[in-house]
Image 1 (cartoon, rainbow, N blue to C red):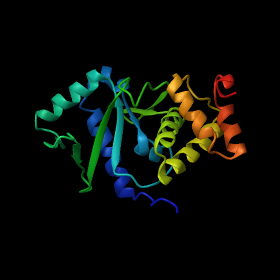
Image 2 (cartoon, one colour):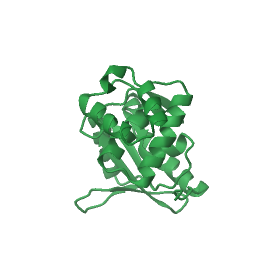
Image 3 (cartoon, rainbow, N blue to C red):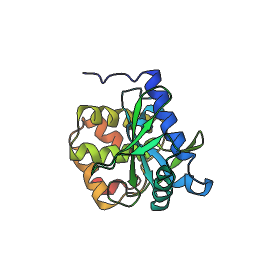
Length: 199
């Protein structure tokens, strides 16, 4: 079943959330505050529904953003519950969840390539493919798999290759390769800088 298509209002709310958070940071920290996840995939032209904005950020950027939010003068608020979820009240009257993932903190080892995106930065399709590959190896919902296949095709068509990866990421992608059709597996292998990792 195809995932629900994102509405223009929801897409605008996601963009507003990300840019509002980005603009709370000084210019020197913005390149360490990078849009990833489902919202990034939306802005790489896969128009599927999501209500979350995931950002890979340096510890310094995370501290600075929390400090700005705690001033109480922004559209963001941090829930008092143990999840510490950050919520953004958009002009579209849509509540957006902002999740900050520390670069080097486990889930996001690194972002090798990112691109300017309005006043901030967005992860490249190749980096999103790598991150989504780890996700589908771990749990792999239907939406995750659909995102992975979209990113696989888009990355291959753009002529990109996957960035260098740590051993755990390579192992996760090897697991994913075993679940793909022969043609798609060969496409994924062709995107690797070091194909011998998969032989």
